[in-house]
Length: 91
Image 1 (cartoon, rainbow, N blue to C red):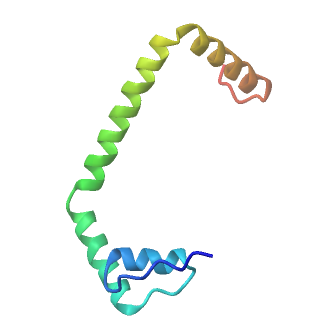
Image 2 (image 1 turned 180 degrees about the horizontal axis):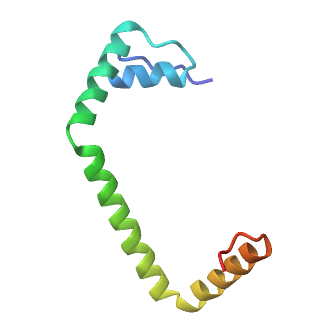
């Protein structure tokens, strides 16, 4: 068995390590996580990252649809028929 990863106490990573082990995080790790979370929330980065990911995902889907149009159309029709059978497709 491989030994447990050491905890870097007083850091957000230490907090995560505690949680991964199923332990209650120590006070220095809890405080470090609070500071990290507050900084992250107020930086605007979460919103920027969400928008960037959504844009990238949408563009990738559009490219996949164009590259594999016949398969996409077939899958779409199958899913639509499935939802209609279940009464979940709006008419």
